[in-house]
Length: 374
Ligand code: H2U
Ligand code: ZN
Image (cartoon, rainbow, N blue to C red; front, top):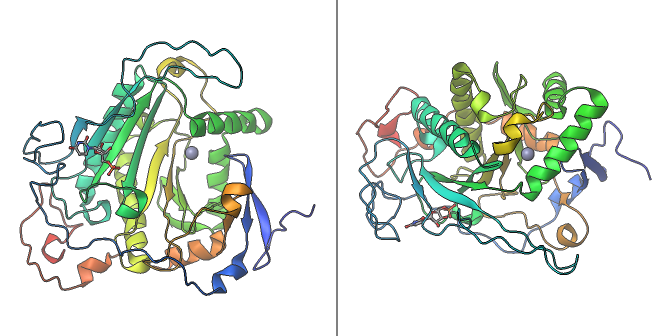
């Protein structure tokens, strides 16, 4: 079978994802087809800054009857509807290999990024984003002391299942390696064994040289639409040096991370001039008992998976061929990267006159956010 040549252009081809050990079908010419299918509601733009009916707001009452404190920065609480709980009975292995089960233990937390519901990460100041990164790191370290996997993830926008219009993420820690974690552990371990260096460190170096899939970069970080991206505007955020876990970042790297996140997420919002929906999450070397094991094959990274394809209201569906055969994408990763790269780094909402006049400085106000024009 013929594999993709180095310049596949508009011809359909398949590309290999070394991190998931699978393939994606790239059919760039399909972007020209008409769309008469489902259109989505555009993301909500008129979110009130504070609404006591929103359980994530400071002072609001949550589902379990607890009242949130008047928090001023980040705020972490135990999820009132946790998918994982610390206590679970030990299960028998099952009486047949086709009916296997195992016990699962863990904790689920929710982290509010900011007291204001009308902000999102790209509209927050660098100091406020840095506070989020610091809290992520603390949680990764604290929960990672005993749990093998600490999954930090953000569902942004109703389209990605976000249940509250308030900037927040979730943290699920488990006493087992979830599927994606064990898959990436296997592929990175194998690459390290065969090539002698971490897969994603080598990948970042190559992408930095090749440039065609780079969206934004700074001295410490690189964001690319990966060569094997499945979602139209999927990106991969990578450190330039070998960093196994969030808790291994230096202070300067946390600052440059805040900066590159703000630049990337501003571009995302500017693409269709909406608060861009996505699911994102961090992957790094496993923790708990793995803290004493050799994890040198692991490289910290964040995945961003946005569902939108051609406008604020037309999303990509992962159905049909994707469910039954393999993932397929329409525009090439290079085209997606070029579009994102060419977008301005000033947020579109900061150029727009808003009906609501807002003058108050934020809890961490600094010059990187013009709160008065939000
Ligand atoms: P999502 O927007 O990604 O669904 O995250 C919000 C989480 O907040 C969700 O998992 C939790 C939900 O269980 N939550 C509470 O724990 N208490 C509440 O009062 C509301 C929402
Ligand atoms: Zn990953």
